[in-house]
Amino acid sequence: QVQLVESGGGLVQPGGSLRLSCAASGSIFSITTMGWYRQAPGKQRLMVATISSNGATNYADSVEGRFTISRDNAKITVYLQMNSLKPEDTAVYYCRDFLYPDTWGQGTQVTVSS
Image (cartoon, rainbow, N blue to C red; front, side, top):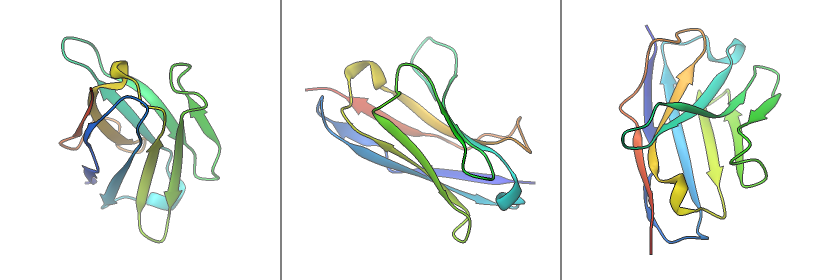
């Protein structure tokens, strides 16, 4: 069973940057698609970005050009570089291993506020 541990969240001012990390254990990491999702208070969890095993990426329209997803198979870690952050990016961010789609980590809180 996969275990996902997200980290790197925090409080940042609008226009700032954060880098999130997700360490995955128990996964066949190198062959799976990984994704970042976020859930704002009172709203459903939505896809932010995905990266396939060969590095192909996909982004939600709301973050295209500001966020970058990447992976390090040797470290079994997926990253989300977030630039030009906006208050509407405030949410709990989760990563997802598409081989285990029902498994979620604890998430990491991102708050964008002045």
